[in-house]
Length: 525
Image 1 (cartoon, helix red, strand yellow):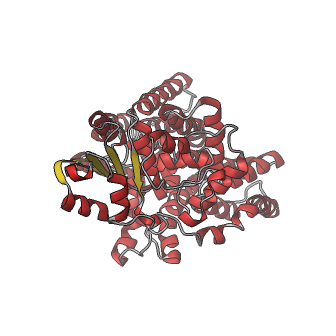
Image 2 (cartoon, helix red, strand yellow):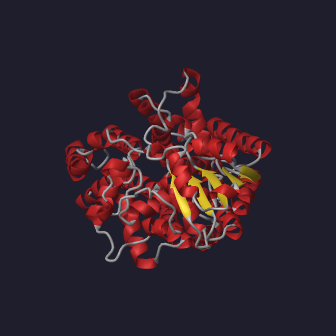
Image 3 (cartoon, one colour):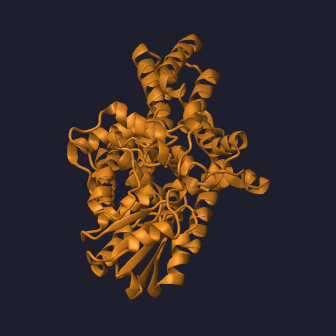
């Protein structure tokens, strides 16, 4: 593909399209458990600590013994008056999560400024995603030219994986920004050197390492590339920048070993090493997940096969036509970047005995590099062939995009739908019993319009007893709705007891939720 001018008009159109798609999607999407968790931590509330160590004065979640108004649970998703400061946000993250604090601090400031609604919460990720687009352009222009930069931006704008996680109220979009910024500054250090660029590279490195631990894999690729190809950045200067970045993150990382040893409600959900065959295939699976039409949002197998065929054919054509160019001019940095992002989780699993390599989002730091590699491959083709391949790839992504925009819920967790239906059914004399982890309880309460009694049953906390707690909760009640959602596999003895001691009137299942409506014997009223 020829032509190296700067097509500013098309780039602005792509940016406008990216913004429009993300704003529309952000306005349609409800929250799921992980996003509710993000909001709780950002407002200074710990959710996953042991019950015995909860400090209500510092906003820690407490499982009420009895039924309470949904407003009691909603307060964990709101800023206090006065709002929690950075120290309390960091404390909440240390108690409840294993992620670094920078995203939560950014989300705390963001929500204090514009609010804690669903759209506002998604808005921060949209902003980070859109901020990544200019970096995609700069990288594409540096490694290929204006056409490749434009293609890379277009792919990033409409790819299903990019759109889906661009509105996720987690740190992934911020991770893209940090990864792309670190890569661009790495190339700039090589090309021009300079104290200012080195200072920015150091800041970007520290920011990435304080956003997500798996940024370390991308960062290692950048460091290794600069060591091998220092260009105008001498190795002693690189070592100085490296040392400063490590000093900046040191206070947090010194706490990591102790933090990893804390008990958390969902602290063991990734335990267990995958079988050897899955570990070996994980880098390829994770790599394809960066470009796939299918994912946690759904999608069509046939369309995904077409997309895979286009990517494979384009890559093969690139290798045949210009294999000497695949690694030249800094393009080897992209390969190191995406390989590190996709093999890092495997190395982590081997070290920790976990299964992160089976979860696609843990390789998301490599997604911008994946889009750029496809853009460079398409740019190596004749114009008509490149346009045809691009159109087929976009068409293959269409079923995934349709699923994303048509769902309204994330990760199969229909909090709003369930809460709306149960709220229309329940009266103040009934009970809504939520079997979930704390973020699941908060999700139902957030979308429950009716002020009806809600009781939390968080099995992992070990505070509830059958039948004692049920007898107390059901005293004087005529009906009870049991909601099971995001319980992380925790058994529900209260369900078995209700099935034996009450009349099951109706049972409904919606995606990842189950709702059971019971009528209680008249002797309990």
